[in-house]
Image (cartoon, rainbow, N blue to C red):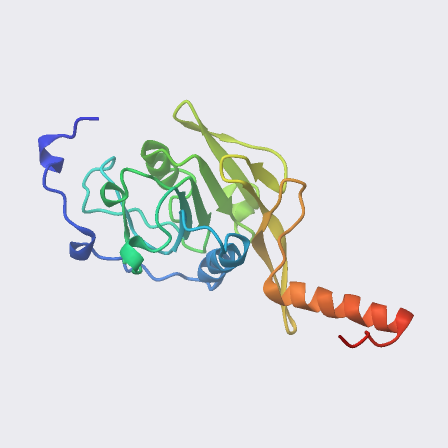
Length: 227
């Protein structure tokens, strides 16, 4: 693709702000994408070809200016370095990622509408993001949408998909809602799922499950034999 003359001297990531500095107005906007990132650290612990950004600017050349980023709550890119040059990214600059755009973008709707169903959707479609997920557990009636929606880009237009958890074969993961319990606090969050629709557990859940299995074994057979 031939770039316009005005894109010939694009700034480097070191010259660009990491985000638009817009504060979130509820904690779920940070918690939910960070939980997805945290889970990927375990699900794909042996892989180095992915990057998940949280509240990070995506700089691209499909908008009005390469100096104006779009900042989703979370996004996933495949086929890029987990840590670019062995260091953390300050922002995601498409022209420094060999043109690789995110394959998955997440927006968590807040009290202040952020264009999740119009302007941002148009931006992500022009950018070429394959899967666009909108999580809207609190304001979906106001916005006249469902609490959880997955869109897939087809012929340049987002089409609403059905099914939950929703399997994304190009990503190799499914996404859907479930509860997260921390002490006495219960909240609805998003999790990754496998192809059979099984939710990936957190490390704490895995450890707790292993402990419960051990206790059941002890109750049935007594103490484990010493090695």
